[in-house]
Amino acid sequence: MYKIAVLVSGSGSNLQALIDNIESGFLNCKIQCVISDKPGVFALERAKKAGIDTYVADKKEYKDELSDKILSLIDGKVDLIVLAGYLSILKGKIIEQFKNRVINIHPSLIPSFMGNGMYGLKVHKAAIEYGVKVTGCTVHIVDEGTDTGPIILQRTVTVLEGDSEETLQKRVLEEEHKALSEAVKLYIEGKIKVQGRKIFVI
Figure (tube, rainbow, N blue to C red):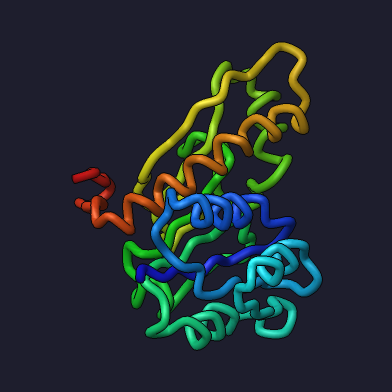
């Protein structure tokens, strides 16, 4: 069976969406493990409740060796790495070894509102302040940069008059929950073809 590792840093609502879609039969895969870069986050509780193995690779402890620690936990055990609200930057061997097999969900329409420091409510605040009429979320392949890898799919959300970053985040998050599972499904079914910056669904 197709196996994935899910990396988390917070509450884990995207992780929960994956768990729910596996249980419903939409995704024919197994979450082999959930790894957090900090202890005590609610995502770990979600994983434990679902009977999934959990690990904490604390970024404060491992620092520059964090990516290598994660690689040691999953090497040879998973087919795909899914970043679901994971805030640390993966680098080095793990990106090489899992080339085109590490994906991330970002709460904007890349290339807008992306890069260092752009996460969580900061992204939605920036979108509102800029005055965009449409925002959304992006699932992309992780490369050596920050939010710079090839785009797999995007879903859009209309920015409403009077939106706060919290109300906008809530609607974008609903689309994230759908988009991430859709992208994982494409991998499971072998439909992802990468050519340079472009991804084709075959």
